[in-house]
Image (tube, rainbow, N blue to C red; front, side, top):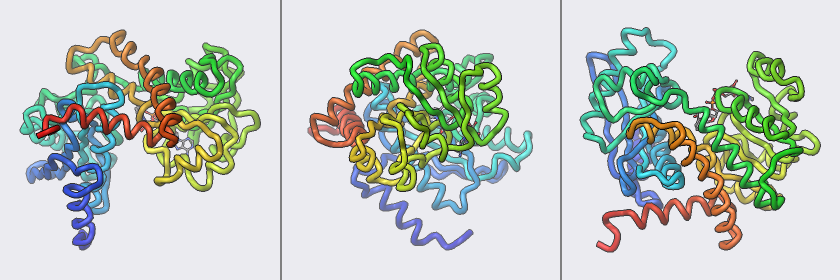
Length: 369
Ligand SMILES: NC(=O)c1ccc[n+]([C@@H]2O[C@H](COP(=O)([O-])OP(=O)(O)OC[C@H]3O[C@@H](n4cnc5c(N)ncnc54)[C@H](O)[C@@H]3O)[C@@H](O)[C@H]2O)c1
């Protein structure tokens, strides 16, 4: 391990002294028998038990893992608050390479992880994230009842991408309403970068409404899966080509984070950005660059909340229609954010943060104490 003194100091600053008032709790977990090293970060329980997924990732050092857990947990507080859930924000990271661990070792590691989550007595509810899958949550659930994202066979809701795509679609309709006075997407041209689990469901929603769809993906088979079934869908070589397509109305980043940057924003042809990818803004300030160019940005954590709405519902016995009803509210929430942005003269991303912070503040048990 590298010397992490400086990084550890940064982590402590984020934990106790950030502008947002810091985090409530961080748990460092080690199980020597299985080799588990994990971090569970609880940012806020003001609105209810912290909810957020488990990332399994080969971090360069422990301090980097803690910093990631802290950032991700904070993001979940905002996402859950804006989704109207009775949940605060939390996140866990397991340090290691999920591709380089055999099935028996993986099971032991996840069982140990489940015991740590259980030890928090429900203050943190876990789920899948990058590097963990539905089958993993079935294992964690053997040790911990505060586990979501399980398979339907084990009482879970399974793949969350169906409702994530539905929520993004609602965000697009709200954006169209705000910008063009009509939520209908018929005849609009929508470019989707990344047609994986979420992106391909999004294509179906758009086509069924009569939108023109342009796609790109680094995996050829993902593109072929769509163009084979829907010959009207146009594919372009890469994201760089997609964001420059003439006449693009909406750009939907549905691959990785950082899609909106100093390089991409100046050349975007779309009037709206609304997609599933997390952390689309490459750095603070990009939201203002978008606004300056007259591009309407539907905040990522607001429109991609369908997945977390689904896993939260699992705790009450999953009901797809109830969840779909909650995900449909992303339409109203997105409109509320645009209205607040206009009212306060700030970009929509900043407006979403303000509304989420207000919700957490209003619910905080410490308020007025
Ligand atoms: N699945 C969910 O419920 C959910 C919920 C909230 C947010 N998200 C976010 O939405 C995004 C998509 O999630 P997903 O579940 O569909 O993931 P996925 O891995 O199934 O799909 C991502 C797709 O993007 C493609 N891709 C990767 N790099 C690319 C690039 N440079 N250019 C074009 N395509 C590229 C991949 O080949 C893949 O097909 C992720 O950022 C994820 O964090 C997903």
